[in-house]
Length: 119
Image (cartoon, rainbow, N blue to C red; front, side, top):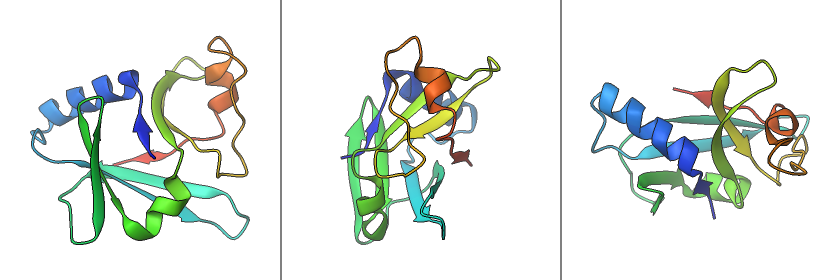
C-alpha cells in the first residue's frame, strides 16, 4: 500500500488550493532505471481505466496498475533535508537506494537519497 504522511498531505492541500486542483487526485508513478534505482513522478491528474484509487490523510491518490508493484509499501513525505530546504521525498523499501531512517531526528538526512520529482 502507498501512504501519504500528514506533512505531505498538508503541503499537497496547499498546492491544490493554490493551483485550483481541489477536485483532482494525485497521480504517482514510478519507473525502474537500468541500475535498479527507481525514479518517481507525481502530479494532479484524472483517474483512468485500470487505475487504483484510494485516499490517505485526505488526499485522493491514483496509481496505474503497472506502477503498483514498484510503489507498494512506499510513503510520500515532506521533510527538511540537510540543507534545510523542504521537499517531497519517497520512502520506498523496494528501491535499492533506500536507507531506512533510524529515528525521526535522523530521518531527513537518511532520506535525502530518495527524492522524487513533483509536477
